[in-house]
Image (cartoon, rainbow, N blue to C red):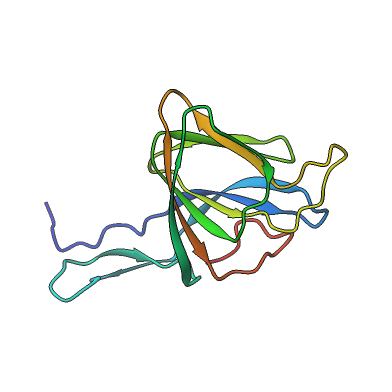
Length: 153
């Protein structure tokens, strides 16, 4: 087995919750692919390093109890949502509902939605199953960009 061969450049999938030009929240499956093969620190073996492009502003850990539902709301700021344990769902205004668990990523960027005929805006989210969902949120310095899913890194 060849140990000095650099592995193929990875692609990491994520869900992008975004606002279209009509103010409707939507979700698209996207992929991060801007990785560099390098050492993260002196003495560490090289690995693929990806930097999604936006400086982090704040890191928050949420524990959503069993049965928790956050009715229609927008993400407070653009943020990466990293499930650590349990399962949760996100439903957008276009009717798309996605369930995620540990190891799956979502980028919440649905600021500036417009209320629909029922007054709902943004998305609703909640826990799935019989255990709490533990989520890490990494809020970033990115402004809302309506009409642009899978924004380049």
